[in-house]
Image (tube, rainbow over all chains, first blue to last red; front, side):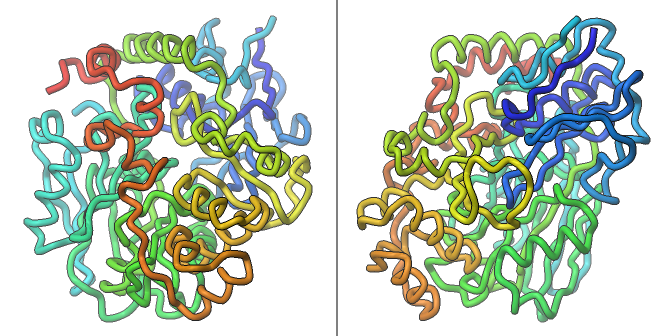
Length: 109
Length: 384
């Protein structure tokens, strides 16, 4: 199983971030999630960055998806995604896919 | 304490000193956010109070709302601002007194402090937001900013939340100006504990599924305001954008400075996020196109001026708006009862008291029994 990201369906609700931390630590916060919402709000540009165990960082930009190293934070003030735990697919039922209201994040085999 | 921090941050602009005040659990669990804010406001000599509801930041659908309370009234705080405030470590932030020098209040990691910024009054609202984010090193800092109109304490001023207007219908911008307060910025790096994570998640998803079966998929503002289905609006639509946790968003971003179909990040300021129905009603009633209205709202947001008031005072086109913003002349228009305003939602007060978006819940139908079922697993107890 892996997560499939379709960033054009994203509405930037932020639920994926808090669902991830809820599963990991039973708390609501965007700071320990394996998935980060990247937002440039004045330009209405947003997408997702997912830290995976096998593919490194998967960057789902609205103009197209790819894997890359580094980056993945909203700035030096926030915890960079490279310092976070990689996605463990919540043991088989990814909470981010479950809570995503638009089908932007789906679990696929 | 589940879903709460149990404390308020206090910033005294007169002295520049900060402190904290404990908030008892029974007060946070049982009182409305509006009531607690009003109490704190009076206790601290007519302070400006930022607050969050018990449900703010939870998985209950559209639990995004906070509030700003001043002597002028209480405005909703939507988007991600309410959630970030709570995650910054405070349920409420009290800003009292008046500063002798201009500056902003910066809230994060359980710290609330005044930051002098003597050069910032020359900046417009958007530049203030950009500057604070650059200085503090984070693009997701939420900035509630006054602009030049707020600095001048004009009755038709309006604070922007990040870059957008539409929530301030009580001239909070003028309240900022009176205190030489240019902005309040917050970033939430904390966490909210919940009692039963899976129970809260499952109950919230079940309630959301019930709503979705009735509401379907959101088309952005067009799902809440019929005129946004017009081709003049939809031809400029870039993307639909949500506030925190909203499954049926009302925000539509229109691009006028580049192709709306352009997805790559290119223009720095391509357009405007529309959700301010009363101002759009004023613009369309005056004969303004959606393209011109979008440009006009961008100018109003930079100035910190309420578009309803600027257009309602006789600015019938983009040139008229520009002239009015330069001259500073616009009589305030009563937005409180305006059709399509957040406050016009029947359950506005109850939603803001809890931390819920009044617009979403007017659409979905506020049902306290269902909400209790969602939140009780998170709190480990029933709603007070």
